[in-house]
Length: 170
Image 1 (cartoon, rainbow, N blue to C red):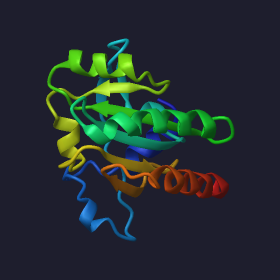
Image 2 (cartoon, rainbow, N blue to C red):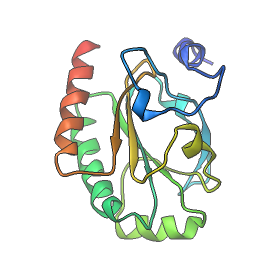
Image 3 (cartoon, helix red, strand yellow):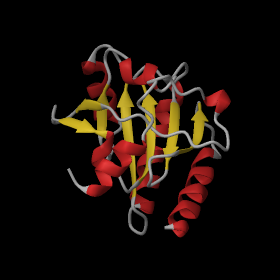
Image 4 (cartoon, rainbow, N blue to C red):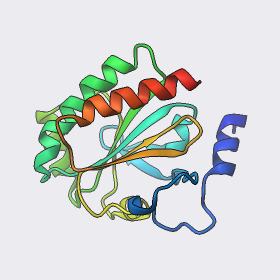
């Protein structure tokens, strides 16, 4: 395990494993919980720590989610645009109980970023996800810097601006 992964693991809040409550996100640092889920396409295990040192947009979604029909393609465009100049990645976490539903959704709306499956909802629960889509912007150190509920037209611009601000701090 490299030093960056060890450092992120050490600073990530695991002690209580309490759900992240977006209503109480404050100036006090809240770090993303690590998790390991399978990739929807390769079925290989993927950990959040695999992306340490990157700015991450962690997006919880489902095939039955109407805003997700618009958000996934928009996030894919944003990811491909920002990835050219910024150490940035979108990670989709699908919460459908039936992975076939997620596969069919992605077949109609392909994305270039990793899509992971959380069929039992344990990771979503750990993050305090109560509505879909719910997303977390995580800085390079693993700190959650923004939470997005639902998906609104102006979210992409907000995400882009925040990611660019974070990348300038590096």
